[in-house]
Structures are given as structure tokens and as C-alpha cells.
Image (tube, rainbow over the protein chains, first blue to last red):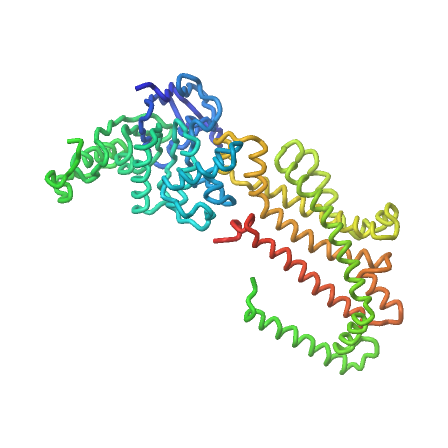
Length: 267
Length: 252
């Protein structure tokens, strides 16, 4: 597999009342083409800054971000950022939102492509709806589909499910996995939810408190669909949480996690 | 929007005020201040000889032209000033100095420049409604949420698309707020302007009624008609809020 993103000695600080505040220090990592990588860290650590640096919205003070061997300069449609608060345009319909990245192409083609992706994310029948008529989960799908429409190499996702309730989050996550099986994208997911990271990612980077450094790296060697209650998933969860400074009891006494019940294909 | 049953108390208050007015005029036996009935018959007189429609038409025409010109200037200028930092820092001081000058203060200059005709009140309406609309449009551009601009940047759309698909739609609700304010000011000003120097319009009608034989019934009829038309103009601006291009802003 070829290297998609390479980050070397990345550093970023912002001015504050107490002088410059280092947000990111000496972060180096490498993401292969088609990989799904999760960056897990405590709230306010600088995960979003790291993602914005990767996506090209801010420039690093030191180090570099290289995409496909070229130094990243400005944000462009090869890597789409899906932000935490969502940025679906409220003044455009679902179809118009989805076609946003296709401006300049033939109108009929725009609509055809938009409707195709609306169908993929399960928004068929809502093409003419306005965002305020949709639920939070549907808005996330609109945002995801709007990104997929331009066939980006990389999806940068900044806590995309944190505004959703647990059930909706799970549904949209499954949806995302299903789509990623059809269309391969490299995904960088920023989250504070360890379970979400284990559910989705091939690899998990645990980030430290500010200034952000990489504390630990975990491979997630389970095939999809994953059973999050399996003993190995639970072990991984405990290990990741321990790196985040949270101690949990061993799951041996949790009845849900008996090996016979587990269909964990990674075993 | 108002429901019919919500307007019950308001109708009651108006009825009480009219009754009080009637009572006070009767009690004081005023010879010059008219009763509500006298106002109504006076207004009917104007309806019958057709002069009321002529005055209303003249006032509305001036408002439409002056306000329309102000929209045509304020919206592009406000967008430009809001979007381009240099345009803002250059022009905003001038806007802020001109803005607090009462339109009444402009009357002598309007007469000097445009003489006594339709052009003077149109200019006064323009000058008084253009500034609130410029300011609202600038505020609208400055308050576009960053996440939307970022998303547009992310999709590397052209400047034209950025403006037509993101900036203008995002600012439109604020422009509408500015237009509502501007329309209110325009209606205030047209009446004031017509009182000074013209031969038609509701403002002229009021002054003329007083000068030509103390017809205070017509003065008050004119005032009430001005109030009612102002209400309708504001209502029509509020109806624009229902348009699909701005509705997203008013839901939730």
C-alpha cells in the first residue's frame, strides 16, 4: 500500500494571554492509501487543530504535511473536512447541497450525481427538502454525501457523530462503513469516543493533553462487521482508555462478553 | 404572524381610545378639534372627490422610487464593504458620519439641488433609507458563519459560485431586515418631506388642510391613513420573510 499522508515533526502554537500556547508538538504519523485512522484524545487537546492542519485550513509552524508525496499547501476538494457542528448550507435544498462541489458541470449531470449519492446515504425522497426539515442524523448523511460527491481521496472527520444520540450515531457509523466498502477513501477520524474508534478504524492514535503528542498507537486487527462486546475489543478498549488516563476493571465478569457468544471474526 | 383571535385585545384598546377621544371632544365642546365621526365624514369627502387616491398614489410612488434606488445602491455597496476589508475601512467612516444626519436636515439642500418637485422627496427617502440597509448588509456579511465559508473553500469553488451560492444567500435574511427598517424610515420621511414643499402627497394634504381653513378633521384623517399604510407596508415586507430563500433563517 502506498503512503497517502505523511506528517513530519508537526508543530503549531497560537498566541494567547500567556504568550504563545503550543497546541501541537512533534507529531509524526503516516497514513496509507485507503486506511481508516482514528485520532483519539481528551477534549480540547488539539485534535481539531491537527485535522485542520492536515486538511490545509491552517499552516504549521514547524514540520510538514505531505499528501501523495507533495507538501500540502491549501485546502482543496481532494480532502474534504466534515466538521463537528456541520456545515450543510441551510439555504440550499439537499440536492443543491450535494451538487455544491460539482459547480460548473452540466446541470443535468449535477442533479443525477446528487440524486445518486442521496440514494447511497439513504436520503432518497428528501432531495428537495431543506436542512431545517431534517433530523440531526440525516444532516450528517447530507454532509457525508456532499463530500463523497466530489470523490475525495481523503475524508477528514472532526467528531462527526458527537452531536447525535447513541443509537443514531451507531446507525450513521454503520452507514459510513457500508459506503466505504463501495467507495474506498482514506479517512482520518478525530474523536474522543474510544468505542467509535474501535468500531471504525484500522488504526488508533492516542493523543496526549495539550500540547498534542502521540502517546500510543494501536492496530485494530478485527474484520468488519465488528462485535464491540467481544473480549478482544473490550481489551483493546481498556488499553486505549488506560492511555487516556482512565482505568477500568477487566471485563471478565461482564456476562455480555462470553467467548461463545462472540462472533468476532478477528479471533 | 398574528392570528385573528390574538388581535382581539388590540381592537378593544383602539375602540376604547376612540371612545375616549369622542368623549373628551364632546366634554370640552371644542370647536376646532374634530370628533371621530367628523374625521370619518371628512375622509369620505376626500374619497369621493378622488383626491385621497391621488395623494396616496403620489406618496407611494415617491417611496417606491426612492426606496428602490436605495436598495439598488445599498445592497451591492454593503456586500462589497462587508466582504472587502479595504472597502470597509475606507468607506465605513463616511457612512457612520452621514448616517446620523436627520433627513429633515437635508431638506434645504434637497430643494437647492432638485428644486420643488418629485425629485426632492425621492432624494430624501433615498438618503434616509440607504444607510440602515448598507449597515445591515455589512453586518450580514460579517456574521456569516465561518464553517460555511470553510466548506466553500474546501470544495474550491470559484469566486462567482462562492458569492452566488454562499455569501448572498447567507446575507439575504439580514438584507431583508435592513429593507424593513429602510421601508419604515422611507415612509416616515416622505410625509415629512411633502409637508415642506409640494402639491401632492399625504404630507401635503395634511398641511394644506390646516392652511386652507383649519380642516383638522382632514389632518387627523391623513394621520390615520398614514399610519394604516405604514402598517401595510411593514406587513408586505414581513411577507417577504416567507420566501423560500430566507425561510431557513426564521424556522426553529
